[in-house]
Amino acid sequence: MAYLVTGGMGYIGSRIVRDLMNSGKEVVCLDSAGITPLAAEVIGKEGLEKVKIITGDVSNTVPFFHVIWEHGIDLIIHTAYIMTRRSDLEPEYALRVNCMGMINVLEAVRLFGLKRVVGTSAMAAVGHVRDLYREPIGDDDAIYMPDSMYGATKVLNEYMVKLYFEKFGVDSIGLRLPRVIGVPFDISQPQGVVGKFSEFSRKAALNIPVTIKGPDFVTSYIYVDDVADAHVKACDVPTTKTRVFNACEGEYSNQQLVDIIRKVNPETQVRLEEGINSLTRSVDYRVPTMDTTGIRTEFGWQPKHSLEEALRKIFNYFRRQAGMALL
Image (cartoon, rainbow, N blue to C red; front, side, top):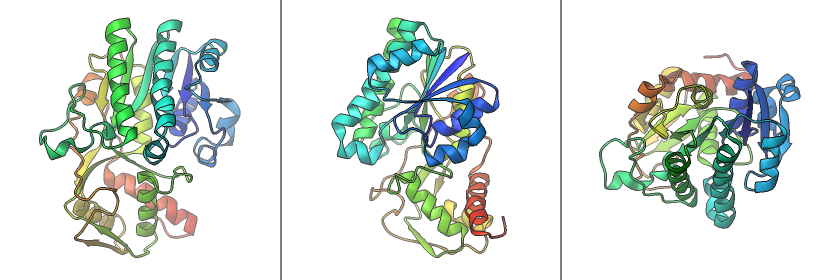
């Protein structure tokens, strides 16, 4: 069985490629960037020698379909997206890659009779719904209030996978993700949420003074390796009644985050202050609580790492690079 991972050289995609390769799967990677430093570190030299890497754009329909046909693809894991900052700067390009790319993926599954598409969505689709709606956000019945071009493209894609399942029987599983933490990350995106959190984590790990504001700000977290694990797991489960699942480890305030950081590294110099949250663009934005009942019950998945365990791995990554004792 041949797996195609779009965006397979990226932050999440590289972990998925690594896990598939480690389990002996035949993997084809389609990515516009080619081999990245991130992928080289995550997948490793031997893994990169085994995976078939194709430089291409998922929104280019005919070349994309040719990849499906030429390599006998059976299942697609779709992670190729233009992220928030660039989406807002280049909305037309983001619409083409994020939405036409998804349509191409869905059409490929329909026309070539593939088993399934597993893809990423994001809480950016939900956006500021917490301002009006206080209940936990469900799976297919989520309420949408995106505040970015990236979030808006995710909304359209969530609707499209439901439509293709209902109209054409295209089997799909989407994973709606919160803040995904981990290292290494895409160094070309230093101002993205992942980049900012990684820099914050680096300083906390190396005992460099750092300040975080907004003790009551709450968000949901998940470790990047758990995200990859969920995507791989979703490839093999029977057809689910739900199309888009929430996937997260838990919800934490910044006060709780700092408490866990101090537990992991007692010598950290993290200071918590009142004020505008310093890890997000918004003034008083609270990420909605994610109801994860569906993913835990419909195909029996749950994260392997708590926030504390994830932070310890992240901190030790930076401490190992700096030649410091591990935590």
